[in-house]
Length: 220
Length: 320
Image 1 (tube, rainbow over the protein chains, first blue to last red):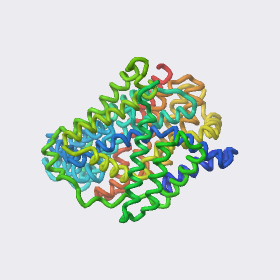
Image 2: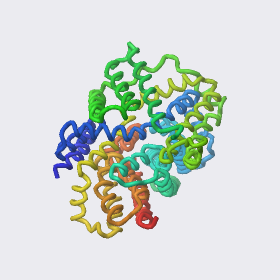
Image 3: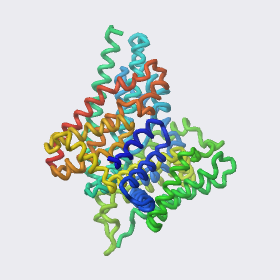
């Protein structure tokens, strides 16, 4: 049971908002020592796996010069223009459009925005604007639109990056399975993320439509 | 013999980190000059020469990097006074040309991943098949970089400076996934999986294939809710439940299990206040009176997505 100390360290360390790198290294060292390894052996184990998993950091590193250059020349502004130009008529459709675009970009490791850079200045005001065409929404309804705008960002961000072979989640799955001595193909891992990514879009459509219904209904 | 390998791009990445370290070391205005420069130097050495050094030395370097990050000494340099061209004007001028390179990358990676293993010159192979996607990504990024330089009229040095700026902005968080995978390795070697497997296996009927799937997906979501991070939950739950029961005992497909297991973890992320960046900060940012309004909006979505993952895994993991 003492070997589970690492899990405890991660849970407590993350809950206390300590630096994640420090928490993870502490959990690794404690687990190795608890399993009866010598300090040198634990360090060697950590070093071996860190070197074996360098390939996980590499894709981000290779893509950032391209993304940085395009951002310097207005990539995010261009995306914001495309979203503004969309002729979505209701709050729910604005959110669905952003969700789809965010997810599409996220499959190619491009972050077109986050809560601070896109949702607050662009997506939420646009959704509220669309809703206001049929009368000014009550504060409660406005809060509902904003909460769903944040949700559209999270859904688009989380569930699509599993279908690109060279991104963190896929490579982490591969790395952990490798460490356990189980062989898996990165392409296969990536393909099996696709059905859920499509389903998430459907779930978004369902919830945003429910939001539209509530907005157009008389109830607060 | 092969022409291009993963190691080539890793050394290239190491040189990039090295250039960042030199930049920080020469920047007298940097508030945390020493700590930041040492962090990127160590990472540069790990990338460029990790294979040549004794593993224990690399391990020690990892510990030092974690301590530097924990002591808040890894910070980005001050933003440059000159911000480059006006972004709004450039966005209007370039239009969708800005989007073309980033859309090209995955298409090229996909094509390269399938085609590169067949490419050869006389008896020199282009790549090792297992590294085909990685090499394809490197080549695709190189091509996209040339294309973007051409479209924007900026040279590649500008691109590398911009890349460095973004890496600085990510800071220590850049290596968190890599470190979590390493933690998974240490867990695997220390036998953490066996302990979890024994505990869970004696409490739940995991000798039933379906029960193993449900338990694995539920544990992914629950551990993510507790730890606030699906990446941290994945090694524990996969080594403890997924590999011993779904893969080893019932012969399930590890790729399907891993992909859908991770996605089940994300459902936990949608409903946990532990993932404050995603769930609590936006509520404050958007001026919502209820701090948990975002979680409340996401709860039905999380449930629908989790159930879909479980059903898909139950239907497919033992079949393909």
